Image 1 (tube, rainbow over the protein chains, first blue to last red):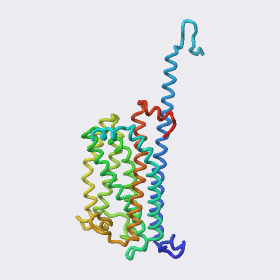
Image 2: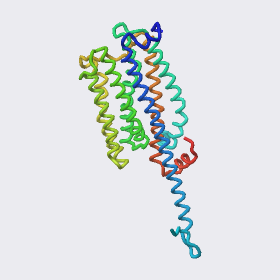
Image 3: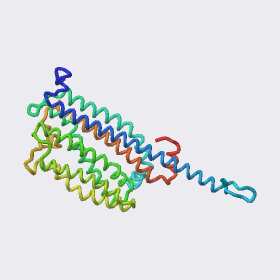
Image 4: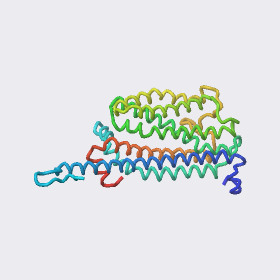
Amino acid sequence: MAFDSLSAFIAMEGHGPYVWTCYGVFFLLLAGLMVWSRHRRSVMMEACRRNYERQDQGQQRAAKPAATFTRVEVSQD
Amino acid sequence: MWQLFHKLGSPKWFYGIATRLMPWLLVGGALLLLAGIVWGLAFAPKDYLQGNSYRIIFIHVPTAFLAQSVYIMMAVAAVVTLVWRMKLADVFVKAVAPVGLVLTFLALFTGAVWGKPTWGTWWIWDARLTSMLILLFLYGGVIALDRAINDEKSAARAVAVLVLVGVVNIPIIKYSVEWWNTLHQPATFKLTEKPSMPAEMWVPLLLSVLGLYLIFGWLACLRMQTEIIAREQRTRWVKDLVMAGRH
């Protein structure tokens, strides 16, 4: 250890505020960037998944016509 | 050789490799970075001239170093984009530009806070500081230019040209401390010489630089995956990947 006590470690002989500000901002921004980047990927995946589901539903609907000669399946209200 | 080149350019192949690499990059990077920082903060000896404020070096040098190497990597990718039209190279440039911006900001911020107790000022229009500020604007410019152009191919080319024009700034940053008589101290690490600090100072510094490199690798993989999903969402393999729910 380069310091005798925890309080000396925090004070850093008067340079504590400078040193700890730097480390605080560093970890905040780095962690923020990492969390944000992860979040962006899951949002992107979720958006794509919803898109695919909508497309698949659209295809099913197209395969099954809304009306035939015998039955109308379009909602009437 | 050409086969490997095409394989490297395949988004699907890259996505798989990135998924396998990422846990190693994250764990390795976090361990190295934390080891370097704890060692540097609590165990490395005090600097005889600057006292304890020098402990900022253990994050200042890694961020400044990475900020510049990320730009060099982007420039290499820009050449690949312009010459071979490789999609993955452009994906890389877009994915890492915001990371470069944050790293450059951190280098400037930690430098300013370090400057106050050491030089007596937060900021000075010194060659090293000014060229780093230009690097920050270059990253901002790359991001803005990419957002401003809707067409993917035109955006890729315009961004690549901007990145290549800006690369002239990198040697200016590197040699600014030698060309001009500046307040900023010269480089800590040189490839040709032994570091002038004792090992108890430069070993933790080296650890945190390597750690941040690995964390950057993780971020680059993750952000490239996001960009690949966005661009390739019409392909069968992305649909299978997304619907399987596996990342």
